[in-house]
View 1 (cartoon, rainbow, N blue to C red):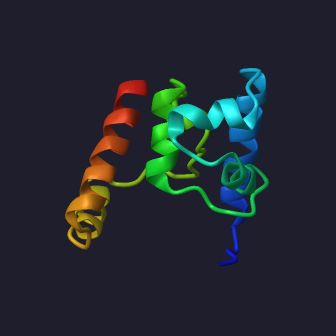
View 2: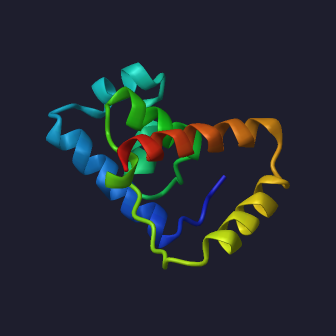
Length: 113
């Protein structure tokens, strides 16, 4: 299956590759604690395959990488009440698994801010 990867995903891929290289790890060594195939990881690093949010969170957890050093979010400060309403609406559309991933993501971000 061929994916069309957007520019944000490609930026994340470049950052992950740079982090791996700075740690002096081969793809094989980097992938071992992730339970990931190094060929598949190569697709991610080259921006040919998007990385899933759960996998990105796992990488950040295993290698103690702050998520905000990998993912840069462009945002503008908005009315707090409106933001909460928007988030509530989005959460209402999520299944249990998605909610757990979001909870973990929020927890990781909150600890770094």
